[in-house]
Length: 310
Ligand code: CP
Ligand code: NVA
Image: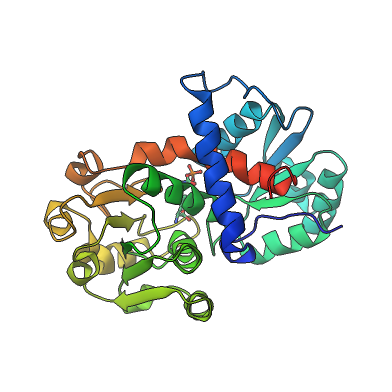
């Protein structure tokens, strides 16, 4: 049987994504103020293990998945890809076949999305996308939870993405189509999102509005979202910082959004570049809730992958 991989939001149906968000919300409420390392009462993943393979650095993804697995009653192994035989040439496919005999699911933070797909194709246990050059679905599903917790149901709302049309932006494009909200994207034309993502979103009825002007994008928006101008693997730092300079999210830009608009950023932030201190540290910033909710959303993702949630 093909395992339930979690590679991109577009691979799931809206009803499945909604079930994951609701399960995350339900489990979060049921835990109350229990310490992060304490398991849920039902420990539904007791005896299961998750391996996490990182080809790139991570703070939030590795530690939030570690907490997520513990809370479900299971265990996690965190490894840098360089420490595996993969680091000296064992193929992604053979690594996937090996890990499939040793653990119950594998999270991969891959340099290339194609490598993640090769890994998943060869794996016989669920594979989770922990970020690639093309997308970051765990982050954005968790951010939908955060938006709904702090603002309102996301269906019919308008969110604005300001900055690079990068991997995180791609997952927001997918989410807009699947959760039924409008996504306005302000980015310089040379750092436009992937056209395939925009085409797929349009096919699925997504309302994605592209523009160059950040002020137009955020006008009356319910959330202003950004990410670094220079992602891991990008090499043109000086050129990017110069091109993106008009796209900084500052108080003047936030003032053009809806009066109660929130600020969101997946982190790590580069303060003084894509966002200034006043906004990220301000009362409308949800960034620390975004971090905390990674645990809850990812618990529900793991349960879905393991067939413990429909
Ligand atoms: N947002 C996020 O995925 O952070 P890390 O790179 O620290 O995992
Ligand atoms: N766009 C960023 C996200 C980091 C979580 C990167 O890929 O580096």
